[in-house]
Amino acid sequence: MAIKIVTASGKGGVGKSTTAAALGMLFSSEGRKTLLIDCDCGLGSLDVLLGKAEETAFNWYDVYSGACSLEDAQIKINGSLSLLSAPVKPPENCGEDCVREIAENAEDGFDFIIIDAPAGVGEGLLRAASAADSALIIATADEVSVRGAEKTDAVLRNAGIKQTRLLINRYSVKEAKKGKLLGIDEVINKTYVRLIGVVPEDKEISAYSVTRKVGKKSKSLAAFKRIADRILGKNVKLTLSLIK
Image 1 (tube, rainbow, N blue to C red):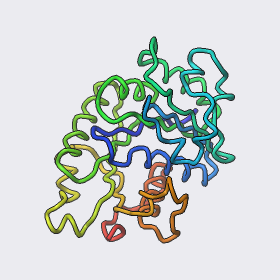
Image 2: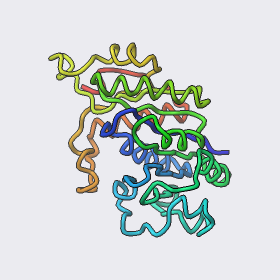
Image 3: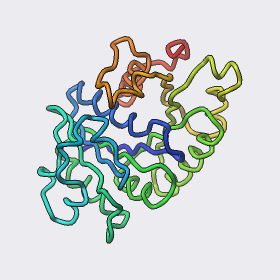
């Protein structure tokens, strides 16, 4: 049975989809069969981030409506990673249970299912969260994003997701020391969510959808790797010095 994780954020542009894609690639590199489900209807980006935009023929709503099979809708990223893309517009007659039904039908064939929710705390988040057992809440270290993360956590817990973890993305120790970003402890204290990792600001990750390249010495890639290892149950310490 697959471990099902929803990636969520109260505010857009914080790197939620990048996180989902990175974790999917990292889990698959460990030989864990992983399915990504893009739930950002109309604004889906995982196919672009993973270089498969031209191969998208079907989406998860086609599976739900019976227009195609689950196998036909999957875009193969590599031998262990597949993607179900988002519909080009919000589907009608699709309540909170439609993505859950697809995930339940798929879970026997995967070790991980990562459901990438749209930003915000509306119907799209609830639809994505209905398919998950746990959540990663993505936030940057600014007041608006942190407030959104706190509200997202409350909505998720009210929806029955009891295990939520905070990922602080695009963090700069230098900017935090200048007072331009909140400190890590401040973010944790304001969101009331347990921290799973901090990912530093990295221009290579931001440019990945264009360049398709990330250097082996990328600190953000190393940070995502540590987060993936923690999810896999490995003993990896949270060390601030690693993101400087």
